[in-house]
Image (cartoon, rainbow, N blue to C red; front, side, top):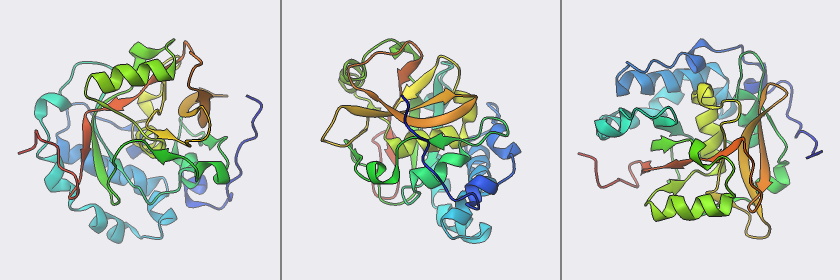
Length: 243
């Protein structure tokens, strides 16, 4: 689009973090608690805890309540056979998306954003999201919508009773499951809008990096699907099918 990359402090912990084996070591055979631990380690290894001003112990303590929540998720949701499916992702609402962008690693290459900080602040969720750390669950990266206009994909997703991912959730997904951002199978994040224009945030691959940017809501792209989730779970918001 010819939009300049948003500058970040080169000393930012997410920019200086080494390549993380935790971020790329997803094990489909692992149980929910092991996967939760892997995601927390990935965030810490990639400098996210430091960006939030927390050491490892404090960061882990802040996320400890998620352990009881993840164990209550419907196992059938996490066992989906679709290669677009992700059981759950830890989301950190306090994390600035531009500070987090370098943690969207593809191998050793840090991610970038072309949504500047002033514009990023104008995006608001179209859906209810918790204010503290939470689990986004039953995720589908939405490859079936490649070639569809985001506004049409949004209508289909909501008709199915599912929820579009927000910009923060898409960044979180890309950080902890970088394997899900694939050539020609990237994803728009229809759950965040400015309310003043037709821009829909998205994460895609550009120059072998993960890039946070935007596309028009009426522009289809053959390489851009539409991510959605079954719901969000936290101490504030509990889905009906938890135990």
